[in-house]
Length: 237
Ligand code: ADP
Ligand code: UDP
Image 1 (tube, rainbow, N blue to C red):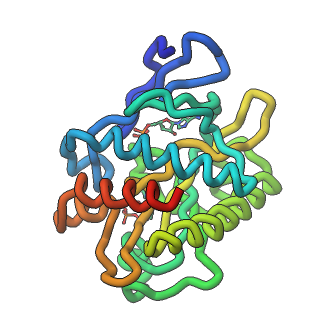
Image 2 (image 1 turned 90 degrees about the vertical axis):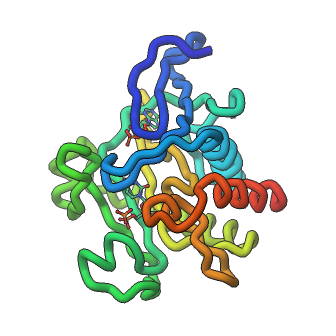
């Protein structure tokens, strides 16, 4: 199913598919990184958990009318996706203030954002993924102003769907990051992953952090909380 390794990232390996030049195999690794790769640790089982979690979330979005690159889960750690040219933007949606925005702009922890706040970061490790505005995004990518508006609107729509989805599992969707890519016909589509690596999820009752913040902040066991997220997702579907 997988042929040439195209790219090895911090959390996944990307392979060409042997059978279809328009498809890729994403292989989820056990590595966790934070602070732009400065903190790094290997967690046996993490790749399987994120592959499984993403393989529940993308089909759920599809049911709700939100298309993505996801084709199917292949095995414990791998999934087949549509090949895209990734737009080098990290589209972050925030419902509550935490993380970088509290440090950058001084928002008090847990300040609610209603409507949700959308931020754009330039996906560029050597520049530390800086926060950018819409004008920068148009200069730094090949997309039009209308396509950028559509991406931001899509991110808000995904937030609405996922907030309800996670709420039904007693989880608060605090914030998350999305990536979009261009298919060969120029259509823009949701890509990459949606997992506890890329979302902040808190238990509604206890406010327990159940995402990569347990690793970033050294406040818990990553595998234990990711397992709990998968269990709640599986209990729901
Ligand atoms: P990073 O590059 O930030 O270290 P990962 O380790 O998750 O991230 O690597 C996965 C890479 O695959 C990312 O660069 C991501 O943008 C890219 N990617 C995700 N989905 C697709 C897709 N459908 N087509 C092409 N590239 C993709
Ligand atoms: N995020 C991500 N990849 C990144 C940066 C952020 O998936 O390279 C996610 C992160 O998990 C959180 C949201 O985007 O859900 C907002 O992150 P923030 O800007 O607060 O960054 P951090 O505090 O992680 O530096």
